[in-house]
Image 1 (cartoon, one colour):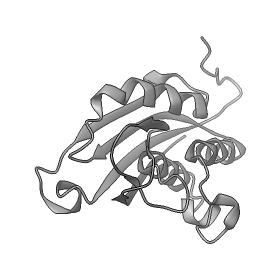
Image 2 (cartoon, rainbow, N blue to C red):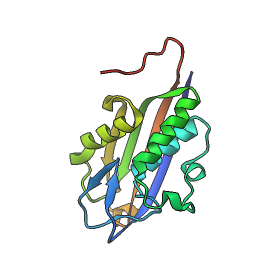
Image 3 (tube, helix red, strand yellow):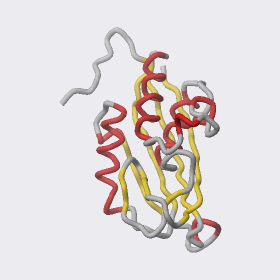
Image 4 (cartoon, rainbow, N blue to C red):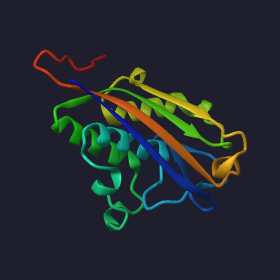
Length: 167
C-alpha cells in the first residue's frame, strides 16, 4: 500500500538569524524567522510525511506556542515525524523537495542537504530529491523577503517481506 503527501512552508528572511535549509547551515546575511530554526525544507517535508499518514500537520505535533520547541533544530522534528510514520507501519519511499528563493544559491548545498535528511530518515540519500528554483523576482520570494519550500513524499506500507535499505 502506498500513500502520497504534499507539504508547503514559508518563512520571512530577517537579519540576526542563522539560515538553515534542508538541515544544513548556509552562510547568508539573513536567516529565516520562526519559533524553531525555521528550516522551511524540513518543515515542508514533515508536513508531507504527516499528511501522507493522515496524522495532521507539523503545528499539531510541534506547536509554536510550546516553549520546548523554541529554537529547536528541525532535524529533531524530522526524526520524530519519521518515528510517528514508522509507528503507523510506513516507511519513506522517496521525497521530492523544491526550495524557492532568489538568494542564496542552493545548488552548492544540495548533496549536504540530501545527506542530512537521509540521516534523519534512516534512508539512502538517493531517496531524497532536492531542487532549487527562483520566482523570477516575482512575489515575496522574488523580492528576497522570504523562502518557501514544497515537498511531496511517497510512503510505503511495511510488510513481513519488507527489506529496509542497508549499505
